[in-house]
Length: 159
Image 1 (cartoon, rainbow, N blue to C red):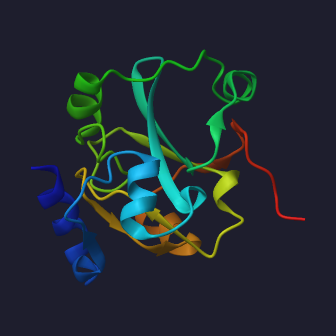
Image 2: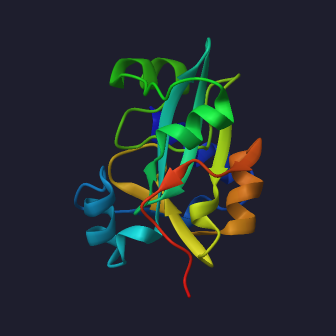
């Protein structure tokens, strides 16, 4: 089970107790924000794409949307999201719990700049009712990210 892989992943860092479990679904940005009593922008949603033959995860702020032009400029490919079946098989997590932790070998993780405006964010933890609060440096450390990218629209820097 995906949550067990994520729990074991964080256990190696002594952080498994930081995983939050909810009695309700947190499978969407809106549901996660309700469960966490926070603004949707603080949810770190993980989107799964196929670039060539490789699965790619992009972690974005909850209020950000993929900008197709920026995505194509970054990855030299059209944004093609994985199907729920592909996400579970290729990434190792079911839709609603996709996260950048304890993923299948070969999955590349990118962090979108829309996250940089926050001290902490809440990514999912391998199931549709779990999340973890991480600082941005912790997200960098535990996600095993490749690079920061700028592939989103619909959010703006604070003034």
